[in-house]
Amino acid sequence: MFLSKERSIELFALLGLDESLLERYPPELSGGQLQRVVVAIALGSEPKLLLLDEPTTALDPSSKEVMIALLKTLQEKMGFSMLFVTHDMGIASAVCEEICVLFDGRVIEKGDIRNVIRAPKEEYTKALINAEFKTRGFRN
Image (tube, rainbow, N blue to C red; front, side):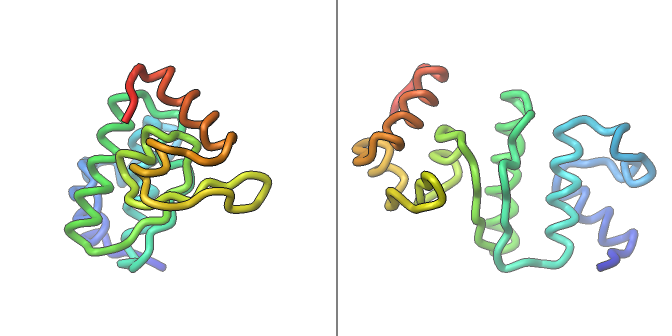
C-alpha cells in the first residue's frame, strides 16, 4: 500500500512526528521515532484491529509512556481495537481491559485485567506480576 505524502504527513502529525522525518532513513531515527513511524504505517490502512507485538520494547520509560498515551488517544480518535502482545504487565495494565496469559503456546489464564492482576490463579501469571511490579515498586 502506498500512502500519499499528505496522508503520511497527517499520520506523522497524529503521532507527534515532524514531517521532516519522511526524508530520513531508519538508522537516523531514535527507537521511539521508529516505533511511531511503524504505527503510522499500520494506521495508513485504517485498520479495525491494530496488532501490536511488544511496541514498547527497547524504549526508555518516558518514551514508553508517550507511546501508550498516543496509542490510547489514537484508538479513541480512530475507533480501532488493539491486540497488544507484551511481557510487561505494567504496560498491559495501562492499556488493556482484558488479558490472556500464554504459557508454552496455551492460554493459561484470561479475564478482566484488574481481576487477573489482583488475584492471579496460575503460578506463571503470579511470577510475571511479581517480577514486573517488584521492579516498578507498585501494585494494583
